[in-house]
Amino acid sequence: MSEPINPFAAMLEQVQEMTKSFPQMQAFDPKALEAMWPTMPKEVMEQWFGNALNEDGLDAKTKLLLTLAGLTMQGAQADTAVRQTVRHAREAGATDQQISETLGMMAMFAGVPAVTRATGLAQEVMAEDKDKT
Image (spheres, helix red, strand yellow):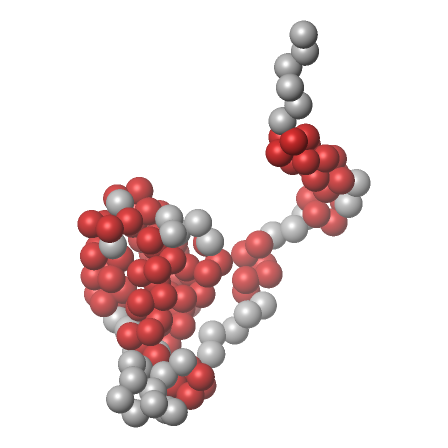
């Protein structure tokens, strides 16, 4: 009797084969795509995400730190989303210390592996700025 076919494994294998037929996919660099998305100016973030329309609401910096916490809770699986959130939080006025504290708080809830991963991604962003100066 043969082993039952795992539909997910079969689908994954088919996608891998399809990808091989597109040579452009082999050269795809997610970080290059990420670099095309600029960091929004603080004023824009305050208008869209901040308390410009809700005076008693949270400011953009706080909302972005909450977003970073949420991404960490999900296991920091979305590298681009974590890095972009760190960039935007810094632009909105968050310090590296505040970002580190936000990530550190998540250790209790998300676990050390998720926080370690998110911290590594945040440090990449922080190192980029140090390289520019």
